[in-house]
Length: 248
Image (cartoon, rainbow, N blue to C red; front, top):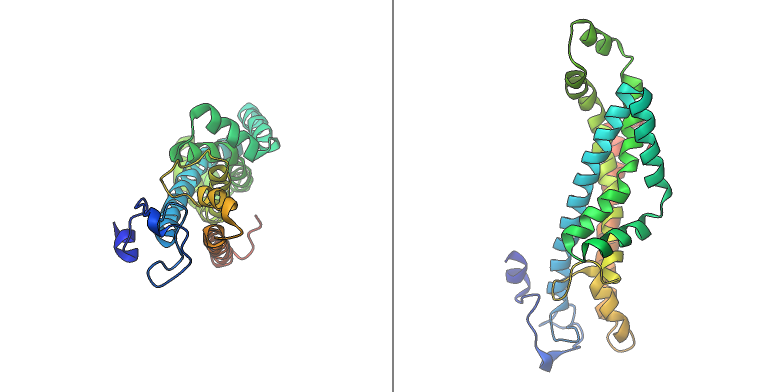
């Protein structure tokens, strides 16, 4: 609703009489091959990208942090089993695996977010496990054990808050990767389905019109670059702010 009021158009409004018009005062970024306003579709595409990125990072964070805490705290068989699964996931080409998952589940925004999370959680596990291992021998952990606190209580009350800054930074840095993966899957036709605006779909559709309507691909591409670079800068800034010594 907000996007429509900002641009004056809806993302699915078709006007064949005004198709493939270049950028103008009426259509800031021109129109596509159906006469739809490109500016509106780019803005709606940002909403799709942010939604998928947020969902993917939350899911992979939950999986990766849980496994990392368990592996780093308990060690032994639990650690070996988790690291075995982590190494297998890490070794597989993420985009190919994500494509396979979406193909099986069916193309949709939610399935794209889930597939990206399934192939990306291993990085969270590695970082959280390493930090948990360094924390579990600290005196305050030994003190908590000595007074009879349960392992789950120690993990939640003492270890998790100490690894949270690293997780926040890693999540911010994982967000651009999720957006790029979303765009790539959309480009291949496995993401949001038309007429839902998706930057990957817009890039794919614009390839046929590069010679006479280059704005169909140029502006979604610029939007992707701005969003990805912006979140990369945000992640780097948070890393320096939260812990200048942290090495990801």
